[in-house]
Image 1: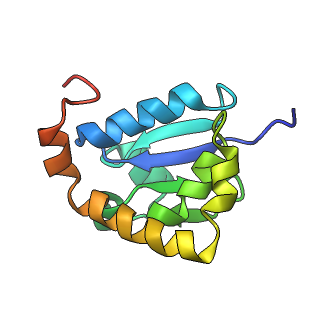
Image 2 (image 1 turned 45 degrees about the vertical axis):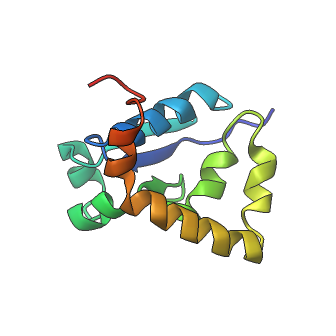
Length: 127
């Protein structure tokens, strides 16, 4: 298998849904070192990626690809899926126009309601 270079996932560490998603991604990665996880609130994120503002960081998760291209929210999902065991086929499906529109709507709804979702379901990661 060709080695995939590491991508950086930037997420909201104050959101249990976000932390749970990052843990799930980490557990399903095709290689141990395919992702680096950086909390949005960290000094490391502010120093390494100053172009990602606090406001933008709180609104959506970001992936920084090895070529330094930054993808945000629903546009980042195919790149994440491409690095997961058993989910790579979805990355191609999510690039189709009809699915992209649906994915955008679903992602926006989840993103805008993530704290309510986190409170209504059992936290995925213990506080």
